[in-house]
Length: 179
Image 1: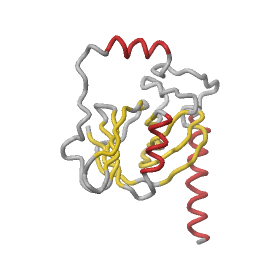
Image 2: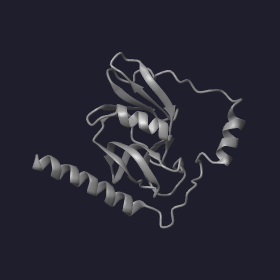
Image 3: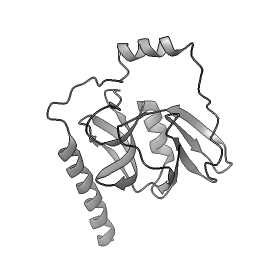
Image 4: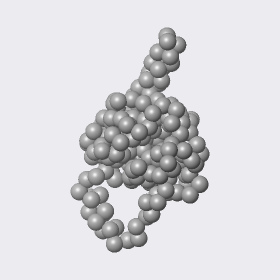
């Protein structure tokens, strides 16, 4: 039990260190690409363009899992029956994990994201080269800036989608990342 507690504290400490080390000096409330009036206007302008499919990607694994499609910027929560119970768009950060199969390694109810934004429902699934990849929802509703110079691994969701992810994705659950 003590080893498990020490390991959990180590993970939380590491995530806190990374957040502090990569946080901007002066975080702002609105981020480029956030759900601001500017991006909502862009969404309306793009409404006439070709819609992306919301169908679960082929060759995205089997069994209970989270599927994250990098190109579509979309996540599916897939049950034991192989069907998605929920799908939603996400806002990725500048860094993306390589396509592959990962597992949820930790969860954190809330904190400050690596982009300096207050987040909730953090579900971490990979760490590489000092970048921690995980799903989270910004308390202020903002999305990460995909063109930021700092390499962060946040995959940002709306608060409602973040709650659904939090309830669905437990430690050791499979996360399949597809191109």
